[in-house]
Image 1 (spheres, rainbow, N blue to C red):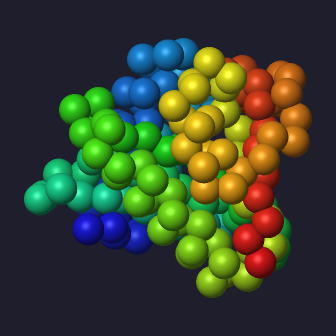
Image 2: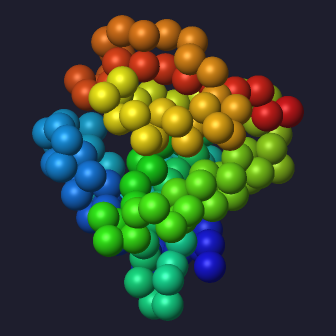
Length: 150
């Protein structure tokens, strides 16, 4: 089941993100800032999505509102033991549908070119690479992808 903006799930949202980031990279100041106040995503017009298996949160992602017509898909993570079950695709598709209902015309994301399974998933749902090179906000990001949704 997919949940939207459930404050009881925010600790799992942060934990899953920190787990995957530390698996491949290092936590950055922007990660620690979000961990201190995950509800800021919602207060700023975005959404946090959590997918549960039973009572356990196993996959997460967020939409960060950048403007009335543009959102950033971010903080996508799936628990290591739940990977390969399609949960990431489910929560991603849910987030993209939500972006449409919010009036988004474009959704973008930043990632890293070493994360091949994630990039294949993004391409499979329609994201196109628009920039390769160092991201100005995240040290770990070196690719930007976008898709038109509205």
